[in-house]
Image 1 (cartoon, protein in one colour):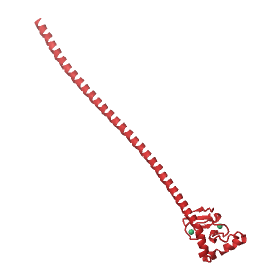
Image 2 (image 1 turned 180 degrees about the horizontal axis):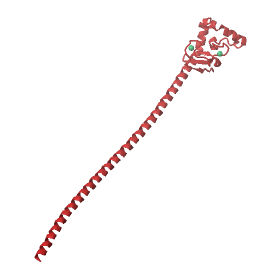
Image 3 (image 1 turned 90 degrees about the vertical axis):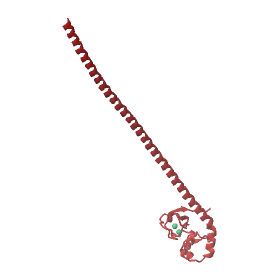
Image 4 (image 1 turned 60 degrees about the horizontal axis):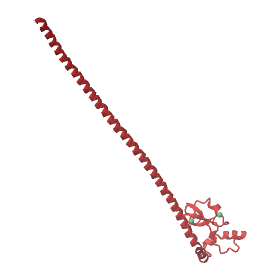
Length: 197
Ligand SMILES: [Zn+2]
Ligand SMILES: [Zn+2]
């Protein structure tokens, strides 16, 4: 009985110690597992935060790109508005110049007729007068200065104002072929039709 109980105690001790060892092993396993889980979770949290940050960054970049496009298009609108304004201004300037010219025309005619009545200008267009007389168009229109007859065909009225020199020197059909002013030889930039009355 004594020996048996001693053996039994020995078995208990061995079992207890192996249980303790088992428990310690289990603890170690659980701790290692927990640490693994924690580090995995940390990693996934880190990844999540990184992906959120990256997503926000991408979104912000897209917003910036969109704003850039908007800025560019509004700059284009501004540019075309400026261009339009310049075109209107140049048109207004031309109209103003034409008005000035038309205002200054009648006294110019009178002074030319008196001061340069037999000037070289009149001589050079003498053939024009002849042509006009032959057509009978100049009859009763002797007050009309020869410079108002087309310098090229010497037949039709000069009604086209050459720009930028502003010489009124060609008829509508002759003006089309002009590249330079026939009076001052300035390169023709444009021509507008002058209207009288
Ligand atoms: Zn002509
Ligand atoms: Zn000219």
